[in-house]
Amino acid sequence: MKTQSIKQFRLAAACALALGLVSGTASAQSFGPNNDRELWNDTAKQVWMNGFGECWHSAYGPPPPSNVCNPKVAEYVAPPAPAPYVAPIVVAKAAEYERVAFDTNVLFDFDKSVLRPAGKDALDSFVGKIGSNMKTETITAIGYADRFGTDGYNQSLSERRVAAVKEYLISKGVDGKWVHTAAKGETSPTTSAGECKGTKATSGTIACLQPDRHVFVEISGTKLKQ
Image (cartoon, rainbow, N blue to C red; front, side, top):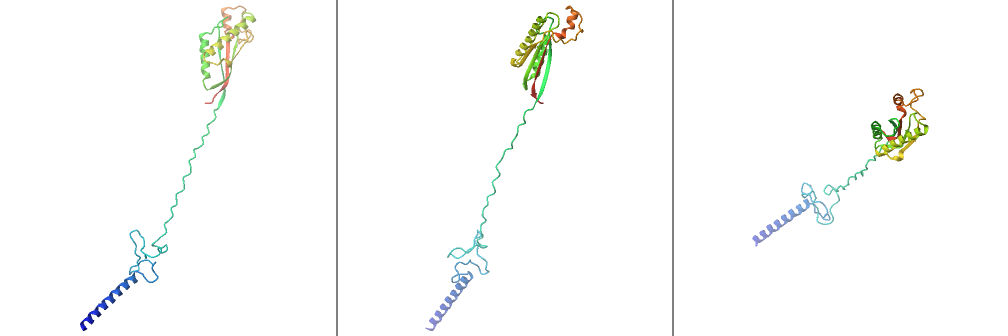
């Protein structure tokens, strides 16, 4: 009987000791009455965290307020959208034109209205100067004759000469609407009075009066400025 009492006493003491240890551990973990939302601490008051940096707390109620264990996540702020691309405005430079005028002189044989090879070469060079970048305004061709023959004959001769020049220009691509013609016969000689003496058509006077047997061609317009 005495021995059984001793065993019962030892058993009660062991149970009391075990209960005391459990109570001490719970106190170290901060599980006190009405304190079920506190964080879990160890005996050194260090907060327990998992591998993601999240604190352990009681399983009852909401998590504790934001603190070092539950920092506020910074809100993502999208970078400002890039400004829309605006293509630069390129202002085309207006074409600049300049006034141009040039001429040529086509000589004819005595009492003839047929173009000579030299006359055709002169007209070819004239047409070549016009080019595609020139805006033609007018082309004027005026026919002349020397003083040998009647006024009427020389007027008709000068008209035939200028007609031959216009026809050749058109054959080279010149628009006939730009070519204006006139004929002055012997009324406006290139030679001066008394320069070629003689009243008969000798070889000397014919050669001297060569400048009077011609067609003068002139063009005016605008051309792209270089």
